[in-house]
Length: 412
Image (cartoon, rainbow, N blue to C red; front, top):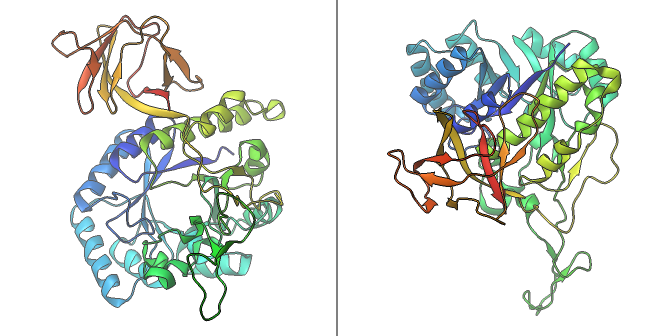
């Protein structure tokens, strides 16, 4: 069975990038009723547009409503879902974690499948049967399970299982953390997590007369301080065959707060990795460009997490790695063989001796490649020395052909 590749869509441009590079479905927040309240998310009209966009491409959209609301917030969510129903637009499923939200979603959208968020912490078959009897058709399993446990729960055929395969991990149990609420009243279970686990910590002596600025010391000796709670990022290309063979129906990439470039890169790699295994299971070998591409985006050091028992899943001396590439534009059209680029960051023509532009292509199975071009013009053919952000420009004299959706990058 080929698992679904499910990508994050914090914005419409992220959804476009995900579909262009091979995602089967995206998950997107409806308003602020999800655990990424600071992502752009979608209002009712935008979400309806996203559903139409996905359906036209033969893709799916899952609406995320996985906060744990009080009564007032639940009433606001109910009103939002009613507005969506009035537009006769339903997502292909709702992702929820709270029984009250489940009840409201089933009442307003009685035929729409319900997926149980990992936030609910469904660790065993009895819990799966309970949620199935409540109307849930898919469970997003906790990252804390190992491959054998995933295989066992999937084999019981109680409901579909979904697992995370890439992205940030939480030091708490399946994201159920209150540390941010205690520190500055930003409540993670309402989507307002300030990520205190990514901060640098010091030990402060608890005694009268102590100068907190002078007498504190790092928890471990280091010039940079120590990130006590900082987990590595999940990356599973090395163990993907075992995850596919576990029977999980959907492979999920984390990252609704990430850029379209990040989403495209991760989707591109996992699309090729899944297809490589399906085409030749015994001959599966991670390709060099997969690791290079995943290293080129913002990330923390990678781990396979609890899935195969990695003994070191914390990164104590850094909270994030520098991205290897900076996005400069996306191909929006090809006219008379010349790419029309939507410029995101300033760039110039790659002259003699200059670093070439790197391309993340949408073509299935094609790895990233370098590109040179002779000149840049405005749409009317006027030469321009530099391409400026939020403009459309034409690249002339390209060394290779480009396609709509290709992303152009330069080294950071």
